[in-house]
Image 1 (cartoon, one colour):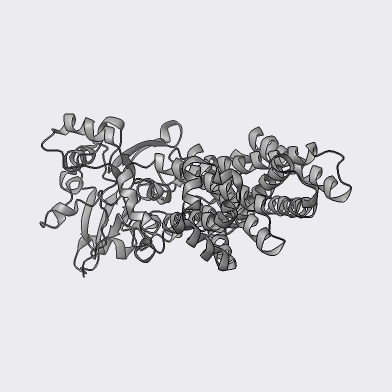
Image 2: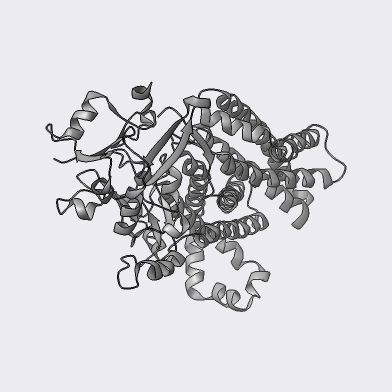
Length: 318
Length: 205
């Protein structure tokens, strides 16, 4: 019984990496947009772009998972919030509720801004809905309780980002996944990619010099999170080098792979770290380096989850 | 109380795969894609003239602390009072988290396509399954409830498989487990499995 065999899995592959990536990115984007709006200064464009693209990302994330279910009808069992009382130990149950309510509170927080944006009011169906008495009443309520709605969205957003790590952590057979570092790594990565995404938005889609303070703050936070991610990854490297054969084999898979080493560690973290470091210390004359670094961070965010899913090694006693 | 367990003696398993066939017929598993509720691994251990051929039957370990149950978001995976871990196909949405959580590779998918193939393979009227879901060994709970042995135990020609109640002090399975001769797989994971193995290497050494 002491002869073991080792294998990776082919059940949760690129599509679950997409689910984790878009789930974490969407949730963190919403949270950061709303926190900035509540505590920096009100910013209609940031909230609208952040909320709507965040909701789209969460929608893509959920659609990818839904598309891969074996029985789509049975999904009704996790959509009911009471599932948290029946299955409080199942992270997918929590994640589904976090994502659903994140989208609801996200739309509600953005609703007052949508009602004062001509672009939305001109849309065929949406415009009529936004001007209707019911939506006007909801929007008024949300405006009166703006902080409450914002916090509810933010809590669900942070919950979603942490959940993406807890989900993978709950598989005990794989040393790379079943450790306290993974939820931390995925949470840091989710917020790092969200800052990068917002930097892209603010530099490309609604550049405004009056927003330089927010943009620079996002760049600084992004830089700190990239550095934190590098530290966590280094501790993962040390953790997997000894202690269990499963972890050691995962380390061999990861650190002998050029996609991981050059693609993720190199271009997804180290290169953007130095570009952002120069941007924060000395500044850049154009927006190109900052936007390029942000795009690299986004690519790295997906690669991290992709490689983690493929590098999980199961140890079987046969 | 009753706490069902199985002991598998690796010294007497001859690798005839009758357990796999009996289980497949009893539980209508998708054998056409090489998915089984119980599977016998055939492995050669050693070098030159010291080679030992080992047959290693595996199945769901019906853990007392089952990770497949804790990750199941719908509650489709549940545990009976007698310790048998079951799957309710009607509740299962097929997210595969249970298969990812299982350290014993006990779970597999049954898809809509498998149900169609199953109708041709097992007969449209005889096929029990109506909806896709994740699937695994149930210790043949439907047979156990009638006082019968699981199909794999009943059919085993070498009596390599024994099924019993760990809460019955007179059960031979209880004796084998209590003596330490039969040991669980990967106990360090904290899953508290209820399938135990008698090692072949020590006896042959």
